[in-house]
Amino acid sequence: MTSNTRNKYITVLMTSPDKAEAKNIARILLEERLAACVSIFPKGESYFWWDGKIDREEEFLIIAKTRDRKSTRLNSSHTDISRMPSSA
Image 1: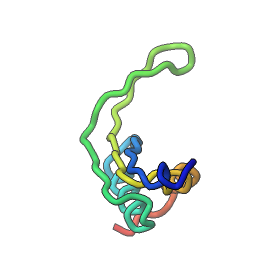
Image 2 (image 1 turned 60 degrees about the vertical axis):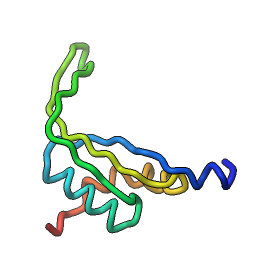
Image 3 (image 1 turned 180 degrees about the vertical axis):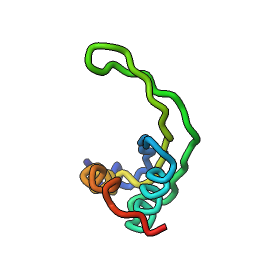
Image 4 (image 1 turned 60 degrees about the horizontal axis):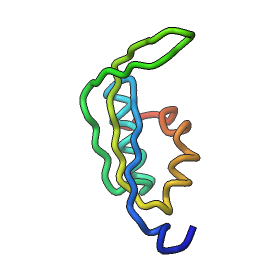
C-alpha cells in the first residue's frame, strides 16, 4: 500500500450479542486509539446459515471510524477486545 492509501479513513463494522459487550468494545477501541469514533446501534436481527440450517440472532451493530493504517492492528486485536474486562 502506498503512504497516500494508508492515510485514508475507513469504516469497520462489527457485531456484539449484547449492549454491555458493545460498550466495552467501543471503550477499548477509543482508549487504544484504534478508532476516532465508535457508534453502537440497537438490536437488529441477523440471519445466517449455521449447522446446515438458517438461524437467527439479535445483535448490536458497532461502527468504528478509523484510518486505514490502523486497520491491521484493529483486525489483529479483534478477538482479544471482547475478552478484556470492562472497567465501566
